[in-house]
Length: 413
Image (cartoon, rainbow, N blue to C red; front, side, top):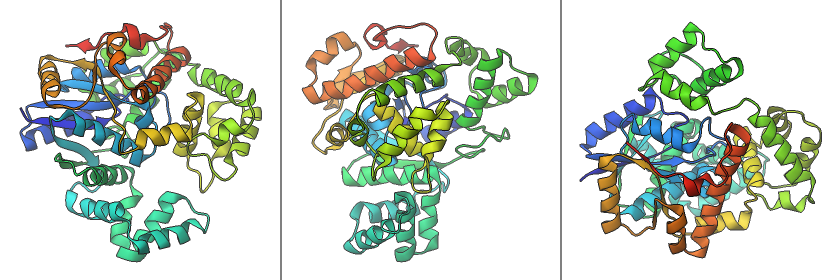
């Protein structure tokens, strides 16, 4: 059985995702599709619009066979950590033949060339990168500038688009781990990553904007309803039903919890949070004291060197109390993660049986039973998945289920 793997967010699943899934499944003649999906918190540092089990149900209804969770220790981190963690898990399953990902470019050769350059990091590359960083610019900009100096504008321009960047990180991870998985890329269709344009394929950002308006007004006008209908591979009612358990004051609850977490301790706890450097802990603490909304807090911290997504990831890592040392341990080449199952259909169940035979990774379908077989470091990683789900439930959902990870069975279609 040929298996296609996808590392994703599905926040929520939309027609662009369905197009990627079907087109790559057809091109590689895959028999089944498994995904590693961000859990309760996404890569850009946002709590997901609906919980991970509801997003799993939408994915299974749209052609995915097996949905597993990408652990928080990878999911809410840099593009490099996100990609490396996902590839490490897919490698360990022993069954994944192909990895599909979107890109603005739409074909592999130039992306793979750049991935090899970045994976190698020659002495000249390191020297120029250090010089660029010394001028005070951000790491992504410094890296782009270094590639331009060494290889020209055409090559460096690949690093200016978010999906190209993530595609390159997937390819890097495959190279570094000497993976046998074959990469496949598809050209991103329709609206850009953060676009609100409603033509063709609306981005997940655009869909979330419509859903948040619905959340605040309890009403969908005819234009919004038509837009959703044209951009979802399942019924609008499925998505709106999932939104019934979401309330509109989640960001304020998150901000209040951040205030308590940050202001009740000395600034040292901020200093050891991932992505906090060069005195940023003081700026964050000062902003938390005065800003009235979560958006205002983020805006008060960002700068030319510190982008919005980095700030949001800092805040999420802080609320979960994940420190730099622990995060580095999850990224160690010797660390082995686990496969947390969120849902499957009959074909997905067959994939799981194949992983049990061929894989080298613990499979978690029942947490109460399964976590007993994890190593201490694996249990530590799982702790952050459970904590992020508890906080998603506490901040953003109407019905509070403490430790739902222990009571919720995988979704079966």
